[in-house]
Amino acid sequence: MGVDKEEVFKNLAKCVVDGDEEGAKRWAEEAVKNNIDAYEAIMKGLAEGMRVVSELYEKGEYYVPEVLLSASAMNMAVEILKPHIKVDKTSKPITVVLGVVEGDIHDIGKNLVKIMLDSAGFKVIDLGKDVPLSEFVKAAKEHGAEVIGMSALMTTTMPGMKKVVDLLVSEGYRDRVKIMIGGAPTTMDYAKSIGADSWGKDASEAVGIVRSLTAK
Image (cartoon, rainbow, N blue to C red):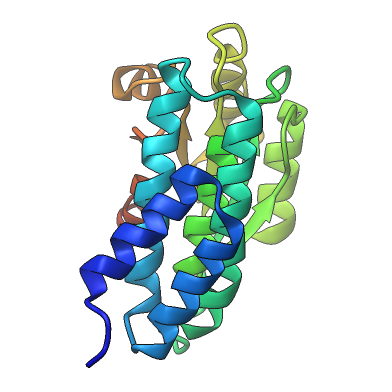
């Protein structure tokens, strides 16, 4: 009798919240051994754990060291699960350029989005944090990206997102790429006001957003 998949998800989430790397690895191996869908294990287990971590961080109950430990535990488990994800290999992978806008160094959310998109089989060009605004445009052109994802965690760096949209417009490239934004101070209203296509409340929504933006 194999383990119950809900139990696996619950334990994966708990290991992420606790920053327990060994436990996360062990439960990821358990998922593989029991033929539990790897993508589901990432979304319902690991991503769920990180959602709790984000909440604890926002409440001031967790600080950066705890969050980094949790992210590390998640990464360890993702490495084990990733080779087992069923990806539709027939279609050309969609390319997403991802980064935290200039002046902002808060990249935990962006890193989670990268893990989610990677896991779903998208090709991610990760520009990192504190990204010069023109780099988003340059990378999108260079890699023929279908989507640009921008994140900001400070209200002072949010206007950078609009500048990227304006740059794309002035270079005649806006209609060739979809734009999604995210980060604690951002909203769907803000996304619309700057001419972006979509907004994600948290990392777990990223895959669905990219899929809907690129659906032919």
